[in-house]
Image 1 (cartoon, rainbow, N blue to C red):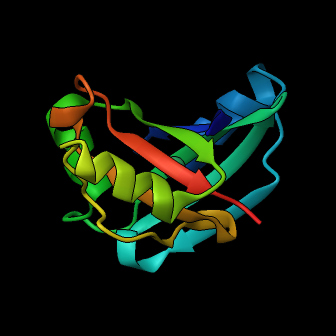
Image 2: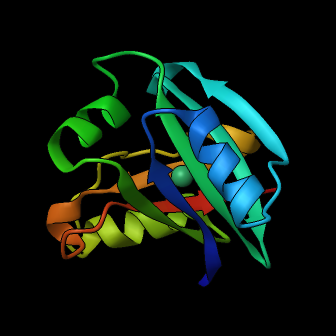
Length: 133
Ligand code: ZN
C-alpha cells in the first residue's frame, strides 16, 4: 500500500540559506515554493530522483517547525510515505492502535492530501502519509 518515500521534510531556520546549499553545492533544483498558512510554514521542494527534499522554514515563532527547531535544532523533521488510499490507511492504523495526529486527511503543500502519525507510535520518527493526484 505504501508506494515510495514521497519526500523527507527538513526543518531549517533560513530557507534561502538552505536553498543556497542544496542548489549551489548539492546541485538540486527548487521546483516549487509555497506558504502553508495553517502550518505556519514556508516550503521549498527539491526533487531527488523519484523523491523530494522538502525544506521547511517557520513563518511564526509558535509554528510547529519553530518549536521543532527550538527542541531539536535544524534537521530531518519528518519522513513522508506515498500511499494510494489515505483515508483507508488511516482507519486501518487507528484500528490497530496507532496514535494519529491527523484523524482525517488534510491539505498539505503541493496540493497533496496528508496526515501525520504520532512519533510515540512510530519509534520516534514523525511519519507523514501523503496522497497525490
Ligand atoms: Zn511533508
